[in-house]
Image 1 (cartoon, rainbow, N blue to C red):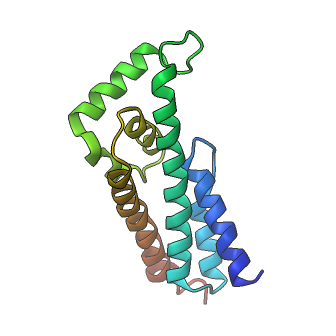
Image 2: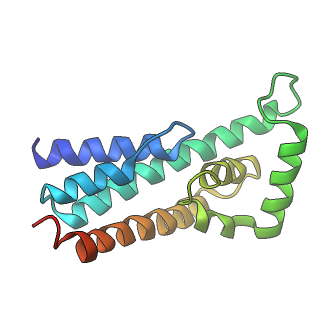
Length: 149
């Protein structure tokens, strides 16, 4: 697979991983790193894809705000109240843990529900996602280089 196709594939996997869909961007990143692709391009593709996926969640949250009173709304009032308390306590800064499995995706949806400014969402999500992928690549370089050579 050529580098452009690999990077686009990684970006799409990372995008899907950041939405409420399951995904494995870490495994794809490690596999492409192992194949010898350029690390900073891997970082950029994964960060971009994962950030765009999170921004889809933010957009869904913005739309969900209007629907939360409907009977069929998929989030219970209790869960929404818990999320509201969390978000009011930590606010926009909670997006710095948007990289975390399980809790990261709902945090980006809450940012949309509470109408966080787009620019703040983008900046905080890029910092979180970029740091995550940078650490993953650093770990691969430090600990896997000896085994994969």
